[in-house]
Length: 186
Ligand code: GLN
Image (cartoon, rainbow, N blue to C red):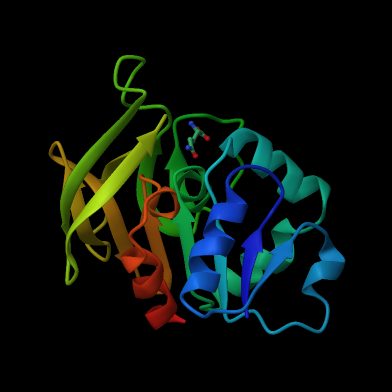
């Protein structure tokens, strides 16, 4: 079962994409949602990283999910989800998992480029559509982080061990390829 963090943001689109691929999913809103469930994979959706981070701590979900991530449960962070996994963020209001060796800058494309669409190569998949919405940029990454896709010279998708991140929203396009990639990690 794939758990999708459903505190705020675009979780339902992820659930739809995963279900289309035949994966079973459940929403994680409260601590009890984790009871008696085997978490084969975790999705951290897009939304507002400051809000999701605050709610993660308020609901008590932070510690058990942090433990799962550290123990190797596959996790897929899109946009705000990427920010929540970054070891460093340019905004002290975000208190995330800090498990991935990347530095993230919030809302990094500025107002003009707040939202845009691009098509670019994803390693092992080929060209895919990418929708960016007030997206973060990965400003730096350690050597153990594999770059999977770049747009305008910036890393748009990356992986480190059990952690996959995209600064774009694959759940908002018809292409299921990135979700399929994630399910293969699970
Ligand atoms: N701008 C949001 C943040 O900083 C992320 C945007 C998104 O997830 N689409 O949290």
